[in-house]
Each structure stands twice: as C-alpha cells, then as structure tokens.
Length: 483
Image (tube, rainbow, N blue to C red; front, side, top):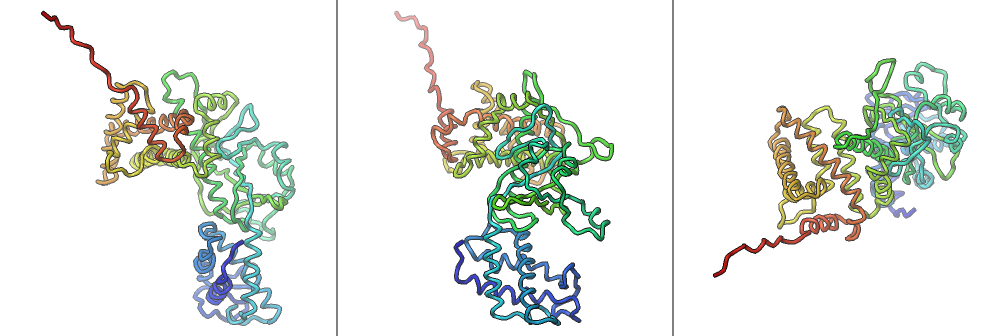
C-alpha cells in the first residue's frame, strides 16, 4: 500500500482528540463527558466516542489516496474500535491503573504503534470477499442455480454448503441475543445446522473486492447489495415485459410472502454473510439488524422454463455479459442505473415518486449528453420510439405519447404537482412499459450498438443513424398529358 509520510502525524493528531472520549470504567469522571456508556470490556465511553469513526475517516483515511472513497463510516468506526483496544493494551503494560482518559496516558511511542497497527489492519482488511444473501424472495423449483449479472442464485443444499468455510456464524436475532444474557456472541454453528436452518431459502452470492474489517456494513457490503438489487430489478423488468406482451403465452409467477401464517406481510428473512477469500475459514454475519433493507415485495418463482424464456425473450445472457464487463463501459453503466431506478419505482408507494423514478431511469438510459443543437425532450422521445417499434407511423405516435408524459414529469418536478387524475395513473402505466421495452431494446441491439463503441456518444450515434435510415422518399412523377 502507498501511504504518505503524513500518515503517522495524522493518526497522532486524531488520537489525541479521540482518546479524550474514553477512560477506564472505574475512573471517577471523563473530562469531556456528559453521559457515559459501559461496554463489555474495561472501558467506558462518552457520547462523543461515536464520532470516533467519522473523525478517523476525515482526519486520517480520507487524506490518503489509497483509502479515500473506499472506506465508509461503518468500516472506519470498526477500525477505530480495534485501534482503541490496541492502544489500551499498550497503555496497560505501562500503567496498571488507568484513572483518567486514555489521552492523558498517550505517549509518542504509541503513535508509532498506532501507525503500524493501522497499516497492518488495513492491509489485512483489503481482499476479495464473497457476500451471501439468504433470502425468501426467490424460490427455485426444478433447478438448483442460475445467474443474473454478477450474482449466482442457488438452492441451499449440500452442494452449496460444501463450498462454505467450516466456521459459520449462527444468526441469532437481536431479541434472542438480549434474551440469552450468558451467551457469547457470535455463536458458531456446523454446516449441517446451517443447512437445516436455511434449506428452504435461496442464497444469492457475489464476489466483491475492497476493504471490510469485521461485520460492519462496509462499502464491500454496499456494492454487494447493489448487485443483489440488480437481480430483483432484472426479474421485475422481465415480469412486466411478459405481463404487457401482446401474445401472452408466458408469465413469471410470484406469490406474496408469508409470515406468521399471514399472506401479504413483508418478508423478514434477509440475512447477509461475508467470507474472506485469502483466509477462507469463517463466514460472518454482516450487522444489518438496525436497518430495513428493501429488495422487493413478492417472491419470484423460478423454474427451468422461466430461465429459458429469460434467455430467449429478455436477453439474460446479454445482460449478464454487460454487467460482468461494466468497467470502462458507459453503456453498461447507463443500463445498470436504469435498472436500479426501475426497481426503485416499483418499490414506491407514492405514484408521484414512481413517476419521477421511472423518468430518471429512462433518461439515464437514453438521454444524450448536453448538446446546444438538439432538443433533449425530442431526442429522448425519438429514442424511445425507435426502441418501441419499426413502423414510422407508430414511432411518430409513440413520440407524441412520450412527450405528453414528459409534460406531466415537468409539472411534478418543476411545479410541485402530485399525481391525482385517473389519466395520470394511466400515463404511469404507459411510462413503465416504455422503460421495460427500452431496456429490452438496448439489450437486444447490443451487437449493433457496440459496432460504434461502448461510450454514451456511441449510443447516440446508433440512434442518429437509425433516424436517418432509408433516406428521403421520391414522389412519383405526375401523370400529365403532354400535347
């Protein structure tokens, strides 16, 4: 790792501030304390202690190019806690009784210790991780696995767990942990017990490279969550495509989640695990107890025929290729953002917010960069029309409909109006179809588009060439009688 010469000075500056938040639990007071919290170890900490991770990120990590934008507040706080424990152990070697805040016991040599410790722990935390989501929102029927984008979707069976580490965290819920005061958390279970607990669920797995320290919601986790959402975005898009296809010969089946014997209740079975490739010995639960992570509100039922239809009519293989080769590919980035906003629109309870999300997805996919010589609304409407049909007359009709929908978007975004009228709800249904068919249209035309390149300008070049196809028609000669 390339670390600047300023790294040690920044850590020293940070610790002199942060260690004023922490003292031994038997200390009569803490200098900056208002309220203190007793933890499981020998230390007590003030309210300000919870700023420690933020300060470590701002004063130390963000000043290093190696870590900037790659470590979030959650990971930074986990690193801060580990650093405090290391410093405290060193202080205890010198001072048996720590009577004031740790900052009063901090010496110059401790700065060097902290620097070396941070370098070591940062190097160890950078790896390729396997992130696994255990979910009840997908059910595989007559198949064991298939892939969407970068994510493998698999039944949790003996074949699946054979590839897992020997040590697996048990997965007690927060209330169960609080109820078992004498239990040491985390609790590890055998592979057999893991299979018994989860065999009725499905595992989504993805590999992500980055920094992850312990069990926190790191950027590694956030990137994996984005990949998992792409799975549900793609399946939602396919479900809508089959639902509005004229010759309705197939549909993707779904059912409502069931919780406590009641249908239609939100699903709660979403557990996340992380395994490190370098020393693949433990699968840890990621701490997501405090946040409700919404993925979808129905269970997708997937069988071999569904996968065949996805490959044949929804271009699953082309989608997978695009997502797997997204680095440096602007068109792939546009497609991924469009899918993200399409899923977000489908999760919205408010029709006005759904309209805005649908338009953001559509514009992310099809809009060109700023060009003073072209009207953005006309350009977007024409691009949608090209993807909807080959007929010039139908294209003109679709262009007018998209522009009418855009007027409603402007009223919502610029004038603060809300969706109330019945015809506005119908516009949202139309708009949803425009997004679905536009996504499918791009996927089906990838080979043609990539002839020009994989940048945004090349996508626009494809549309411009489509608009100019065929040339001007020559009117027939008039049938005139010549004397």
